[in-house]
Length: 181
Image (cartoon, rainbow, N blue to C red; front, side):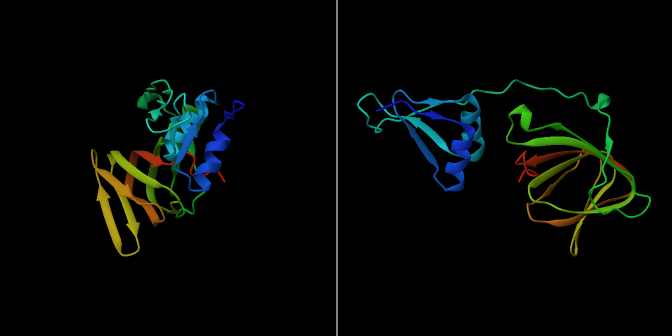
């Protein structure tokens, strides 16, 4: 049987088709990016044995991306103009862990000055408050977090990010590529 090359696009296609396992033949090749995408999307990659049997699958470990550190004090936040904010609300953010880092999760810093901003999440998010008070409202629910507090916001939530004065927080999102169509 001829060797096959599997790319990240092949893995994404399998995931869309709800196939959770890819069985590689003895000579097949899978790119490092495809291995990472399989890991991120939960597609199990196994290599068949020499006889062609898959009775004893050998998982292929993902090639790990490099470690990354972001020094928070050096992060310069950019104006964020996408979400509708109350007049006078200064919303700034900076993504610091992105798709190019080969991570299934993303992260960044966000700050708000007095006011609020509406947003609908198409991803899961965790916010860790660094400064001030962060207020998250969803319908009749409202939570408030101060320095050191962690807030979880599930995918599909239509919320308002707000603060009575100022807040700065780290956000972690899954998946990292939530805004790609």
